[in-house]
Structures are given as structure tokens and as C-alpha cells.
Image (cartoon, rainbow, N blue to C red):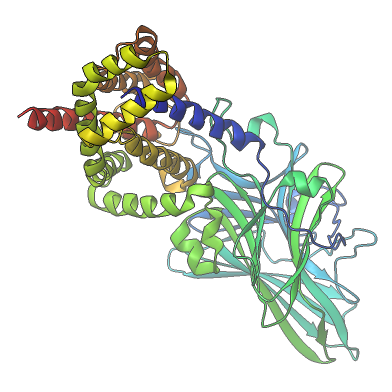
Length: 531
């Protein structure tokens, strides 16, 4: 039991170390060619003007499109609030003096509209400045038009659907001239690296943070994160691929371009602008359009919450952007099980309670072995004390005698460590699941718990957790005679209570229920063992 208690302290220190490491670790970095293919399209070339904007809206998203270039400069998610109890919708894309997050697209090349040399953008024309999907519509097509020298008609169409966060950007080039055209389509995401104070998406409290940065997928790599720090250090990507997507990620939400490949090689690139803006984008291969002909090229764009089942339908591996960290292989099945339970009970908090009972039932054989070993060790304590008394001056002989005693009594002194080893990855995987799954964002439980993904505002759950942990420790430490160790054991619940003050209330709820079930299991196991 002495080894078990020491290991429990080690477990606490180990989790603390993992948390500290998360702030510093660097993801795997691929060494690609440093060639810079990015497009330095200056957003300040044309000042924002309501007359040069159109609004496109369905039942879940509201887009603001700048008619200079046809970029999406603002996107609001109508079913997600900016903050708990707020009436403002979550604004994912935004263009302000101190923060930029845009989804840009255009045509470049010899006959393209977007001139890289002087950063100019075409001014499109639209009949209206407000387009809304009506109740009896499933799909809304919003065309904007640019006529170049009366010889080529460029039509950029935004296609949105009911209840969908993915839309299509379609270019139709009607070449009524006598010349052949050469151009490329591009799509890119650009975002200010430094978040302004009013847009900080992370808690200031001590806790693990989810990934914020760029990501991409190719035919060789299913999912790869790419930190803003790497982009700012000019470690730029230049990848050619036949499939995939590019994205920018943050907690709960993501924006991603999914090109239309048509068996052709698209290029994926990153870039950094000196005004603290990171860019990730793609370019299509050169498109040749003969005279007196038309050509259509399109791309999908996801702007919204990271809903795994919907993202998986939009593009292969796009659902992997819900990043559960290095314990994803545990977090993903736990979330699927949690979702099944939610469909039954209709409350994420009660689903966490039920999943706790399930996990404790699965690990019950290990728990039983732990406490049976604990009781046996308690009975052996007089013999252990005698060995210490007789061979205290000879550490090697004392260890040999103890090992011989354990072998005779058929006791594994490390048997109590296994439940702790199993509990640690479950704990961390649940943590990542709670802070990464948008379904749990602002999900209420009971009474004062209005958001299971954030900390308890009144710290009631952490205090209850500390009390339950105290009772678990009291039942487990009766055979510890060393005064120093007893003080350490009593201090552990206090440390954990302080530690859990900043953790998601859903995770603290899991630990409370786990401790309560442990206390019941302890009583039952010890009662039957004594009989």
C-alpha cells in the first residue's frame, strides 16, 4: 500500500507535467520547399463600404461578401452565441482594423482578374445587396458578375443550402472573345496571428488549450496541423496533391477550403505577411479556355462548427480537424458513446454520469483486485514491520525478505497501480473531448451549471470532488503508519481541489461520480472479503 500511495502522488505530478508540456510542445514539421506561392491581396486597397457589400443568409449562417474580389469578409453562425447568455451570434470570419479573418478566392494567371503585381481586385456587380434563403427553398444561388473588355464574362456564384455550413464557390468564365484564356483559381484563408483582447477564445485560467492555427490534408497525409509560429518563421509549405483540403482551426470552429480536383494536381501553400497575418491556401493548375467557349470551376468552403458527422460528408478526413490530441483513439470512441447516451437521455450532464458508471463497471475487476490486494497488504503489515525491524540496516536483505513474503502470500504490491494507470488516460481523453467537441459548448446540466465545457462559476463541484476524494483516501490509507505519508495523503484532496477549480465542470462531474462509485465499490468489496 505504501507503493500505491507513492504512485498516486507520482500520478498527480505526472499529469501536472503533461499539462505544462502542452504549452511548449511543437508538432511534427515537414520540410517542404520554401517557394512562396501565396497571394498578397491587399484588403485595404478598397475601403469597406456598405454599397460594395452583399449579404447572403440561410437559416444557419450569415455571410458578408466584399464586391471587390468577392471575398467573404464576415461570417456569423446564427445557431451559436458569442458567449453564454449572449444574444449576439458567434462571428467566425471578421474584418476589423485590429483583426482579420477572411476566406478569399479568385482567378489569377495570364487572364485572371486578381492582379498580384498591384494587388487590385475586380469590382463585381450584383442586382441586389441582400439575399436570403426562403422557407420554401432548399438551395440559394447568388451570382455576381464582372465583364472584362466586353469580351469575357466572369460570373462568381455563391451556392448555399438549408441547414448547411458548407457552401460552393463557382466560377463560370464565358469567353466570347477570339483569344484563348489561361488562368487559375485560388482559395485561401488569412488570419491575424495575434488575437485582440475582445476576441480571445481561450480562458485565462490555467488549463490545457486546444489548437489554433492552420491545417491541411493531402493524398499522402490525412491530417496535419501547421502552427502559426511555423508560418511566421517562413517555414512555408509548397505541396502538390490530387486530393485534400486546407483549413484554419480554433476551439469548436473551423474554416476549410475543399478544392475541386478533377484528377489534377493542386498546390497547397502558406505565407506570412509582415502585418502579422498568416495565410494558407491552394491554387488550381492552369486552365485553358478556348475562344467562344465556357468553362466552370468550383470549390467547396466550410464555415462553421466542427461537427464531425457533417464534416466527414463534406470531405474525407475533414472530421479529423476535431483534434483530441494524442489520446484521440480514446476520445473519439468516448464521444461516440457519449452521443449515444445523449440521444437517450437528452442531457449531456446525465450522459457524463452514465458514461462514468459504464467506465467504472468495465474497470471493476481491476478495482476489486486493487482493494483485495490492499486488504492483504494490511494483514501483512505486522510481518512487514518485523522485517523492517530485523533487517533495517541491510536494505538489500530487507528487499529480498519482502519479495519472498509477497511470493509466499501471492500478493503483487504493485497491483493497486493499474487502476490509477488506466484512470489517467481516461481522465485526459475526457478533458480533450469536453474542450474540443462543439456539441458540449454551452451545454447545460442542472441548476447553476450552464456550460459543461467551462469551469464551475461558483467552484461548488470542485469542492464536492475534494470531499469525495478525501473519503476515498480515508478508506484506502488505514494501513499507512508513517506520519509524514499520512500528512501527504491528507493533503492530496486539497491539491486536487485547487487543481480542478479551472477544469471543465463536465470533467469535475465525471470525477465526482467516479469517486462516489469507488466509495460504494470499496464498501462492497471489503465487506465480502471480510466474510
